[in-house]
Length: 120
Image 1 (tube, rainbow, N blue to C red):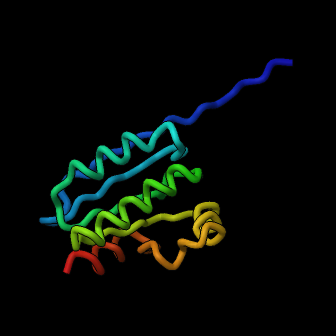
Image 2: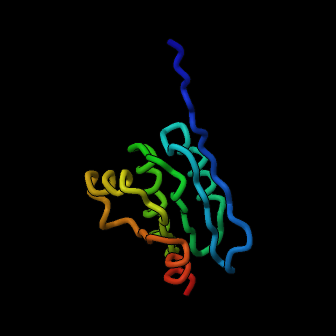
């Protein structure tokens, strides 16, 4: 019997044509330890006041990726910037609950809601 292993690739895209001062990072694929350096580099490279991370196409994240998202949270608090996570699936919500950070992270159901709340 032959088995085929499907390996999903992780990618980060900076969405063009966003409102002034807003950066949207669209992630896709599994967000795991092997991807956190790329994520941290992209997050640190931006000078915008608001960063929105679109997780709609992320099927799951591991604890290392959650740690890098918490790093974004802490950095934004320290620099008095805004951030939001959108498209958080049930699997990630469970991770947020189990790890005790659900109440700390800024989440929105949709990109439009995040833009409306954070662009002001």
